[in-house]
Length: 325
Ligand code: TXA
Ligand code: MG
Image (tube, rainbow, N blue to C red; front, side, top):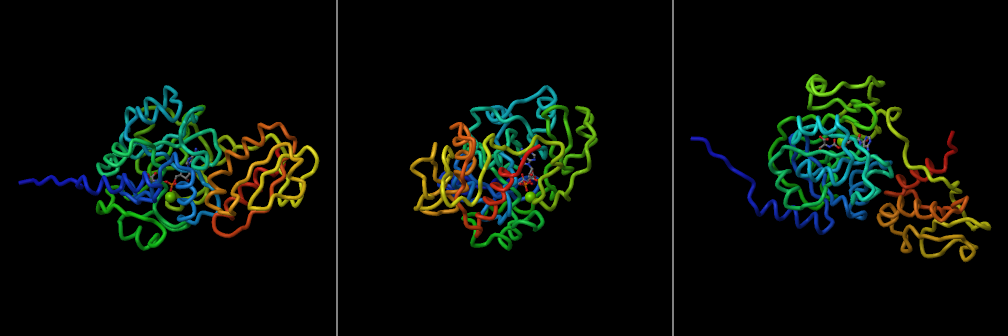
């Protein structure tokens, strides 16, 4: 006699409530365990990067319950629709153009105008996503530089004390991350993974690109950067570590004491008045965009400490400040 057991509603409700409260919840998918956060809550997403200890803001995958929910986030080309109907739910992530009214925090997509979306087939993941009703961003639930976890014990070993909840669904069935295909221009394989390339090529032709830079099990290197549009770069010039504001500059402040001359800045926004790096990360991309839109030719940026999330914030600011071709 076959017994079919399901995770109880209690576990699902607990996970959903934790996500609503902005907490970090590890849960199983058919590939590996993910570390989930409410994608629409910038502070929760910032805490997620902090827990992983990533030195930069590598964009995250938005997990949703079904293709209809994915269509509220991203634009689907004909090829993307074909892949979604063939392989969702399942271990395929699609990188697609982000819709203008996409509710996912900008920090989660690291300021890109694309978004990675996936509909996992694991019943526990599916039940949580359906009950939560919002996209959940979830990188593999390991510390930066470690391999992806396939059991709740792996997650505990890596993230104990850094996250609020682990939903134990036993070992993950596949043990390898989802395959990532970008459908922006032509479909491009960005990361080989649990869905074989040959299966994908039965549905759509894949353009040839340089092989991915990193093993799919090590998640800190942004994949195939050459094949993707660059990170959001402000039109304005960024002047980092500014101690004072020069005429006509906008000011991106940090901490309780604005830089000298702040009163004559063209526009001022503060990443965090209290000097909180989680809050600063959550505000980073939207503040940069808003100051850029003010029309100032230069944005003076006050120093941000390099501790904790400060490392990733400084990494991002340095890239935004780098001269562009
Ligand atoms: O199987 C999986 O995909 C697991 C489970 C938990 O769903 N998740 C996972 O996430 O492997 P993560 O964050 O460890 O790896 C996601 C990869 C990263 O290398 C990231 O650079 C890439 O996806 N990525 C995310 N958004 C992207 C985007 N808009 N463009 C290009 N690459 C993107
Ligand atoms: Mg990973």
